[in-house]
Every structure is written in C-alpha cells, then in structure tokens.
Image (cartoon, rainbow, N blue to C red; front, side, top):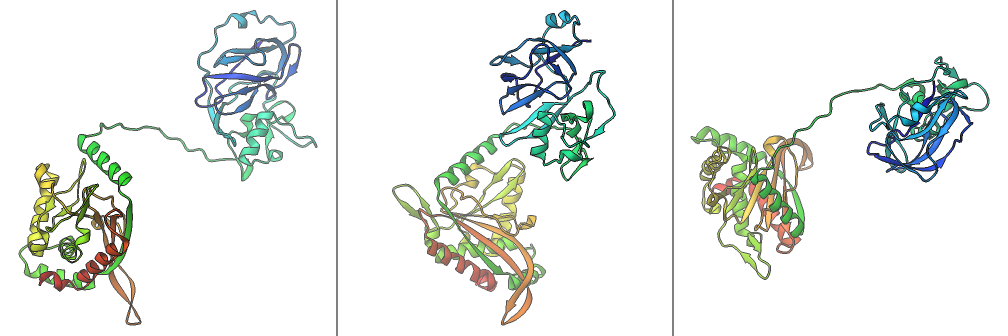
Amino acid sequence: MAEAIRLGRMTDTMEEGFIAELSIKVGDTIKVGDSVADVETDKATLPLESYYSGVVLYVASKKGDSLKIGDLIAVVGKAGEDYSALLTAPATPKVETKESAVTTKEATITAPVETSAPSTINHQPATNTDSRLKASPLAKVIAKEKGIDLSKVNGSGEEGRIVKRDLENVNAASASTPAKVFTGTESYTDTRVSQMRKTIAKRLLQSKNENPHFYLTVDVNMDKAVALRAELNTLLPAKVSFNDFVIKASALALRQNPAINTSWLGDTIRQYSHIHIGMAVAVEDGLLVPVIKFADNKSVSDISAEAKAWGEKAKTKKLLPQDMEGSTFTISNLGMFGIEEFTAIINEPNACILAVGGIRQTPIVVNGEIKVGNMMKLTLSSDHRVVDGAVGAKFMQTLKQLLEEPLRLFL
C-alpha cells in the first residue's frame, strides 16, 4: 500500500518549512530513516526522515518550495502501485505525532517521532556489529548533540539501521539504557494585577532606575540587646521587639548623622530636621509603609505601641493615605522570616533605606577567644547622588554602636 510522506512539525513553533535540499527522485528505493529532504525550519535546518520503505512513486515538492505542516512531499510504495488517491487527499493541518526535544547548537527543536512502520520493517532490533555503522542522518545529529555512542545503540530499521525513534529514551551516559521518564501536568494561574501592586511596581522600578544605589553592610553583636529585651519584657506591660530597638537606634543615629536624613530634589538636596521613620509592612497585595513620626523623640515603648498599631491597620486595610506620607528614612525588616541578609530598594523620596536581617547564633572572637554570639546583619541602601560612601559608613558605625550598647536607647 502506497504511503504519503508529508511535512511534519519539526520544531515546537514551526508552521511551515522551506525545502533547502531534496534528496530523492522518482524511482529511488528508500528505507525507513533515509533523509528525504533538508528542511529549513524557524530554528534550524534539519533532515526530514522517511517513515516508510519502498520505491519513490511521486515527488510533489522541489528545492526552494515553502510548505505548510501536512503538505505532501512524496509518495512511497511498490513499483507500479496506484497512488492517485493520495494526490487528491487534503493536506493534514496538524500532524498527530508525539514530539521529542532535540538540542542543537542553534536552538532547541522538536521533531516528530516515527509512530508507525511499514510491513517491510523488521521490528526485532538488530545490533550494529559490522564495521560500517548504519544510522540515518537525523539519528547522527541527535546522537552528536546528546553525546550518545551509536555503536552501543540497537537499530530498529532495516539491517539494524539506527533511526531517530531508537534514540528517544537513550541516556547519553549509558547509550543502551533507557533514561527515566517523568511526566506531569503543565498549568498556571493568571491573577489580575491590583492597583496597589501596579503602584509599587512603578515606584520601585523608577527608584531602581533613577537612583544610583550603593550598599553598606555591618554585622552587629546583639548579645546585650537580647539580654536587655528579655529583662524588659518581664517588667513592661507590653513586650518590645528587636525591630523597636532598630527603629529607635536608627532615629538616634540619624540625629547624629543628618546627611542621611535627606532627599534628592533635582536642583536641591533637602535635609530634614525632623525624623520620620517609614516602617515597611508586608500585606497580601504588596507592601505598605506607615510612618512613625518624630521617632527620635519617642521612647522604645512608645515606638513599640505605635508599630503594633500600624501593623494591625496595614493588615486590615485601614491605613489612610496620610498615614503613609512624610517619611525621611525607611526600615525594612525580614529577619522574622529567617532572612539573614538582603538589600532593599530605596523608598523615594528618601535617600536611604535600612534592610534588617534576622539574629543568628554564630561563633565570634572576643578578646582572643571563640564564643557563640547573637549576630545581626544590617544593610544600608543609599542614593549616591545625595549620600557619599564615607557618610553612609559613619551612619552605620553609629547605628552599630547604639545597638551593641542598647542602654543608650533609653537615656
């Protein structure tokens, strides 16, 4: 029975192919795996293999033709066989074949797997034992790119010829051993971008693109802060957090280093005499930054109460626009999530933002002896148009000293 050789989908995005070279003519005898044509796809030029054996009865395409998926290329069968019905059959718009990934130097492509074989094929695999290796052109391409030794592969084509289907599940490390196949279902969910997320994205992209960020990181020994907080929480009616310590220490460090408490306004640099600390709070839709105003004049307990109130309002979506305006410096703390260190994007119009990592126990050297210390990393992101490296370093030095001697926060 005559069979039609049609253009199959040779890459995952292929819609048509260009016949770069035609390898057959009427009267030729071909076998499964023989190259019929070199087809230029959207990603690479690949040999198109025949799925059938027999005599070429008819050639429908020529070099230079542009074909769509399913278009007829040739007809193969027995000499003298009637094949007229194949010439009038409609082109198949979609070739129902499995696809397998083939990596080339140019691109990653997909090519159809032989899903049927003619009656002349010996389905018992034969081993390549003679001196001349028998393999189709496409099989050789696949083997080269996968690093497969073809001498270890059993061919299912005529006379042990290796064709592409023989390489489908071959492991390069052991050419005759099928690779483990994992299957699953691909899926995804699209979620509409909220206005809050759009605003956050716009502001952060603008800040990162326009502000020349630089970063300074210090390690802070929190041993005394850990001990002081534990003592305070046995005495105070409401517990204080390490974040409350960081907010108060930052406010005092800004008072001593006013060049950090600034904004870039284009033609001018504004230095604030007041200290308003923005406190980044993660919510379901993104990030909100309520402001603790005049933080340098408030006690740690006052800051703690206000921070708790802002956090609750943020999570219940009760913050008003004016609650999030006027910050001169921002703090972002991810320590409670187990993050040791990170860098934050500046919250405009602030010149700086402080990223706070978690407290971790780690070996440290104290007076020549190794001890276990409670260490915390702080990273300052600064706008280099406003803040110079030495200015940022001095601020971080002050902040480190305040946190390592936490009693100074209560004086």
